[in-house]
Image (tube, rainbow, N blue to C red; front, side, top):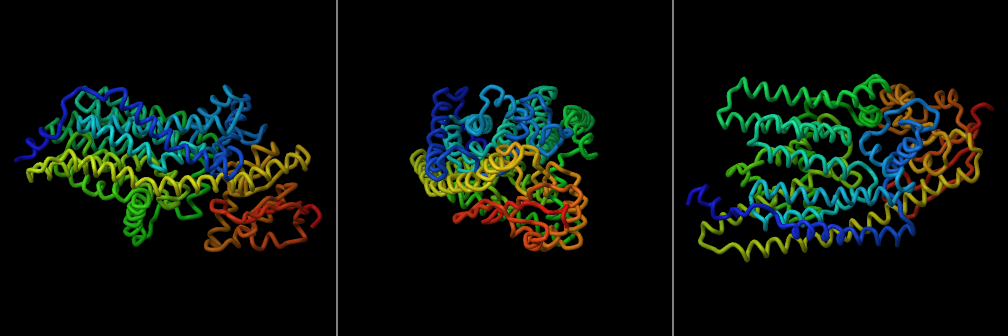
Length: 536
C-alpha cells in the first residue's frame, strides 16, 4: 500500500469540527486550571502572580490607564522597559474596565490559553482533516501545565502563544489562496513580535515554508521573490511604530529589556564552541522539558517528526520549524534561561506545537497498524487515553509549584511594597533589584538597579560585568552610581550584593523578609536599608 492510499484511509473528509468539540476542549482547560487556583489560594491566601515581573506589567498598565503614558514612575519620561507592549496595552484596557489586578489578568490570560487550545485543534484539522485528531490535540493542549501556568502568570506568554498559533493557522489555511492572503498571517505575526520580540523567528519560518512549498509547486522564482518581498515589506511596515518608539526611548530598535538581560549572560555568541554546542544543548533541554511534562506525548512527538518528513501533510514544515528551529535560533540570539526557566515562559508556544507533532505521531502509528492489517481505532484510543492520564503527575506538581511561587512573591515583594507604602514618605526614592510588586503597591518612585526601566544604569552594569563577570562582586561597585542618584532606601537580595550589604557606613537595615520555602525569588532574604550616602 503506497502513501497516498494510507492517507486516504486515515483521512476524514467531513468539513469541519463540531462546536461541541471546541466546547469540550475549553471545558477541559478550565477544569485543569482549577487545581492551580485552589493551590494558589491555599498557599498564598489571596490571588497573586508567581513572578515579580508580572507586577511590572501591572505598574506600566496602571499608569497607562490613568493617562500618564508609557512610564514606570509617574512623571518620568516614557520608558520601553516592557518586553511586550501589546500585552501592557491589553492589560491597561482591561484595568480601565475593572480597576483591579491580578484577577483581571488571570481571566484574560486564561481566555487566551483557551484560545490557544482551540487553535491547536483547528491547526490539526487543517493538517489532517480528522475530527478525532483535532479533539485529541485540543484536549492534549488544554491539559498542558505550561500553558495553564502561562494563563495565570499575568505576563505575555499566553498572548504571544495565541498569536503565534493564529499566525500559523492562517499561514496553513491560506497556503493555496492568492499570495495576498498571506498578508493576514504576516500581520498577525507582526503583532506577535510586540508581545514577544523573538517570535519574529516564526515569520522567518513562514517565509521559508512558503518558499519550499512554492518550489515544490514549480512556482517561478521571480514570483516567489516578489511574494516574499511583499510579505517582508508589510511585516516591517507594521513594526515601524514599535521600532520607532524603542528608538526614541533608548536609541535601539528593540526593548530595553534585551539590553538589560542578555549582556550579563552573553550576547549573540561569537565563540565557535559555544555556537556549535549551545543549540544542541538547547534542544536537549527542550526534549527534557517535554519529558518532564508528559513522556507519552514526547514519544509521539518523535514519531510525529518521522510522519511529517516522510508524508508531508499541509503544514509539515512550518510546525516543526516553529517548535524546534525556534529554540535553536532563539538561543543563538538570546542565550538567557533554559527551556523550562520560569515555567517555560519564553517558549510556551512550543508545547501546543509539540502536541500537533505528537498527533502526527498518532497518524504514523495508525498508518503502520493498517499496513499490518490491524484495526487501529481501539489502539489509538488507548494510546490517547494513556497520554491524557500521563498528564496527572505534572498537573499536580505544577499546581503545587504555582501556589508556592505565588506565596513567595506575595510574602516577599508584595508585602515589602505594602510595608513601604505604610512606613515611608510618599516621595521616597527606592533603589531595588526587584521592581514589580514593590513599585505597584508602594506607589513610590523606583530606581531599577538591573536596568529594565532605568537604562541609564546599564553602562555602569556593563563595565562592571566586563571587569568581574562571574561573581556578584561587580554589582557591589554600583556604589558610585548610587551616590549620584542618592536613593532614600535600598531594597536588595544580600546574596546578590554580598559586599555592599555589609557596608554599615552606607546602609542601615530597617526591615527584612525571609522565606523558608523559596522556589522563585532571587534570594531567600530581601532586606530594606535606609541609605546614608550623603553622610559618608
